[in-house]
Each structure stands twice: as structure tokens, then as C-alpha cells.
Image (cartoon, rainbow, N blue to C red):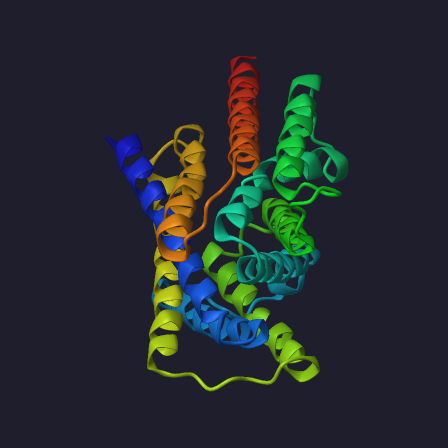
Length: 291
């Protein structure tokens, strides 16, 4: 029952993130990306700071100035910027499909920079997954959209965030990390507004969409934390890929997108590679536990 509850919460979290993406894409039609980052960053920072305060966690800590935390914040900024730009400039379905390569990028980064042992099977899965990404992006072909490279920037940033989180001192709670991660979006957005398009007026519908994005994003994060606490990680984690299903449905119904065969094939390859990598990591963990 705990695993079933964990799975339900994980799927609910992915649905929440997909709806958040829909709101962000709608808002990007009338507001510059810098303004969106300032509002979402400030709102998310306040929400997570209040949650941390309610649980008795201090926001001010020397550990927040350590290298892993600073790298995590850098990854958060880079990943969010890249993904928001991709959502604003490319179809939601293709941006969400490319984002599914993040677990493969985490495995690649762990092998290259953290000394993790990765055998030929997982290296092969990473290569196949990257091939799936190329099918979606299609560099050099007629359907190539340069803006889709922002999604790759998002994958790189989120992978850095996840890798840095592994090295973060345990004295720093996840709510503290999230509060500081969101807070770093504010100066980035302000810089983009200073150097690029000026802030635009916010009408009622736009304000409602921004509020919806904040609520769904925070709720999705809370659901994901509870899912990982309730269920076994190896059982719950694969259901992260349900986000792509929600994104495809929203893209078709809300934006009239029609993902072509190459996009769907590439997405399927990425998900299959990611699931194989997760299964392989679980098998190796069980083998080490028996020794």
C-alpha cells in the first residue's frame, strides 16, 4: 500500500508539473521570460521558506555557502532558464520529451565527475538515449528548431542540480535548498529585464495563470517529496516519466500541437533508455547488498 500511495503521489506530482508548464507557456505569450523568472522565483522562495519555517528549519546556515550548495543553485538557475525558454519558444511536447533525458545526463555526470562505476550496458543506454534526443532536435534537417537547444541547456542544468544535491551536507534540508534555489532565479530574471525586454503589465487572467503555476509547482514538489518518503525509490522513480504523457495531452488539447513520428519515437527511446538505466542501477544495488 505504501508503494501504491507513493506511485499515486508521483503521478500527481508529474501532472502538477505538466499543468505548471502549460501556465508558463501561456504567460510567456504576454510577459518576457525575465519577468516570469522574477515572479516564480520570488513566489517559490517565499513558499518554501514558510514551509521550512513551519518545520523548524533555519534558512540561514553556513552550509548554504558550501560548494555543493552553490553548484546546486547554479544548476537550478541554468536548468530553469533553459526549460522556461524552451517552453516559451518551442512546442511543449518536444521540450518535455527532451527533458526526460535528465536521468541519463545524471548518470553520465556521475561517471565523468563523481567517479561512479558505469558499465558498458549503462553507457550503451546513455548513447541510445542521446540518439533519441537527436531524433527530436533533428540538427541539420528541415525540422530543426535552434530554440530546442534551450531544452538541452535545461537538461544540463537540472543534471548539475541533482548531482550537486547528492554531495550537499545532510544538515541542509530539502526545503532550505528549494527556497535558495528559487531565490536565485530573482536576480537572473532582473538581469534579463535590465538587458532585454522591459516588464509588461499583468492583467487578471495573466495573474491567475501565474498563481496557478506557483500553486501547481509547489504542490508538485511537495507530492514528489512525500512519494519518495512513502514508497521504495526503485518502484516510485520510473513513474516520473508519466510527465511526458501529461505534457503530450496538454500540448495537443491546449495548444493544438501535433507531435510527429520522429518526436514520438525519440521520446519512446529516451524513456526506454532511462527505465533500463534505473533497472540496471537497482540490480547492481541489490547485488552489492548481498555481499
